Length: 145
Ligand code: SF4
Ligand code: SF4
Image (cartoon, rainbow, N blue to C red):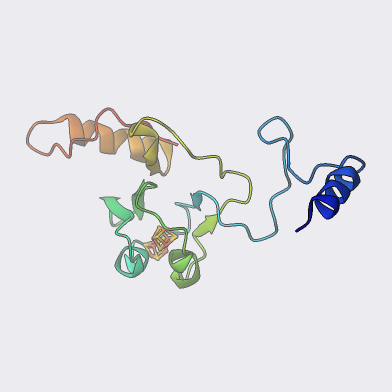
């Protein structure tokens, strides 16, 4: 590239709009079918564990609260998830989805990456069980979502 052509490019760019986006000050639109944070519907879940078996990242646990009454809690390890969507495709009951809106997931702390999904009373029951020394799973401090 000669100096002359370089000045030409610089001059032309003075009259062009910048191509960069002003993120995070201006929101960009996420594309359709974007793979963001998992969403889970406990009302449809049968506890079949297919999503757990098929997840290549070991990012999901389905914890049984009451098998007879189909009460389950999903423990989602977001920091392990590769957002491959395998669990969404394989769940035969359409319980799992990937959010198109929730994708700003960065955090300097570990806690936000462990998420509990489920009915409020089921998550509360799980936390209570975890708090008991004989059944503790070490998750008493986690928050339900
Ligand atoms: S595959 Fe679907 S129905 Fe089966 S445990 Fe996972 S979320 Fe529940
Ligand atoms: S999107 Fe992929 S990595 Fe994430 S929980 Fe589902 S199967 Fe596992």
